[in-house]
Image 1 (cartoon, chains in turn orange, red):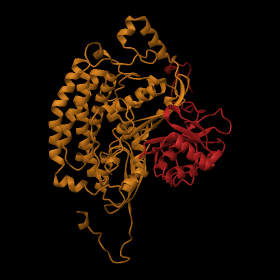
Image 2 (cartoon, rainbow over the protein chains, first blue to last red):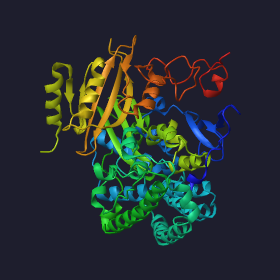
Image 3 (cartoon, chains in turn orange, red):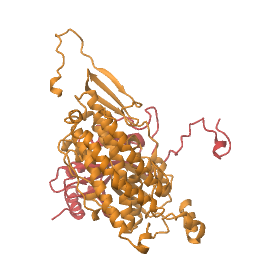
Length: 409
Length: 172
């Protein structure tokens, strides 16, 4: 398709060749979040792109040095805010690694359900927005209804929809209610049909394919050198997934495939995310089945038995003395965090989300660094769009799934 | 024979001798230290060696230890060998008066922005970096915020009324 377009050949010296500088500014309907690109354009082709980030920098790493562990969970929400439960769970699992806490299987399976729902929520947005940027708005509207249902499931458990602050160190703040499971069953029943309908709309659509194939591609070697992880790396053919390489939260008990692409272009990224949604649905089905197998007293377990670090449920705080004491100690930051350095990574929706936590035994971390996948792979954007048309650059940006919160922290 | 922490440690000591030190394995991750002049040599060795193959730079960040004289800033590299699935961490320490560290961005393109972020927050000067300027903070900022000496709040603000925040008195 792009081979048909040639640059107009003007006689030598007839006009000075100049490039246009275009500011794809921080506020722009096509950039999903606040980040800026200063593009040098030669007609419609991009000669170079310079990225500016930091418009939503909120000093999370500095804040974390002044906050006890539970106060850091709300700031991890705001990293990749499209899939905040994954960030929350990742942070809690990092704390559990530091504190040497083992979570019971039921907690792990419930966590897997929530994390995979968050992954579906994020990929759903990314794929539908790629379609919107290519001009197809309808699919987005159909899929957003199911993101709403996912929000309702989160709301049943933690009370919030987007920035969830879900979970505790060692488990969850309350057992999943019957309503939560009913909504989960509704989701599992209805979402596959809608996803299939969306895929029927876009996947083999001639215009959609022509816009996405062979644009924004990157080779596996360059992607690895740029530190790509997650669906963007898997689209280039490297099957690196933290859930399989370093399983956490009992992911080794589940049976799922890692979809990989070949050329790393926009279409491969779109397809990888689409297939990952199917895999996530399968994982949720398996996890839900495993959760239902717990009967009697086992079905009431929703946290590990670590009263020193687990913030107790409010109803216990109001009625039991021990729970009141632990609640007080944890909130005031009087519980002892061991000295140590730990790095733990989870598979976020965009790739390897890492938490590097250094504790000096005090009530707050000495240093907390977030390894943010978006920040690391956004560097490659200028290489991905060199020589591309402006409209392809927009699609490349949305198919990379750049979330501004994760870019800047 | 699959790669183990012990084997990596042996290879490193064999190649670098006394310059690699403080081997530890906190939470199963091999961690060591090397003088700052050697950081590229260690990175290159870990990258090129056919047995070690640490070809993925997971993370690059810095930590400020104001109490250790002459070693106030530590730059921490997290590397990952994807084929054998082993991670590793190493640190280089530098003096805060002259925090010059050689850039890893020629070897790993991902180090480019990670080093800019480290410069932005800690003031570590990466020698040879193509574009060492602030990335997340405003360009006009003249201090390095994540250093321990700087408080969380910006002391130069004149618009916040302390009486409203329960601290008593006002900033004029």
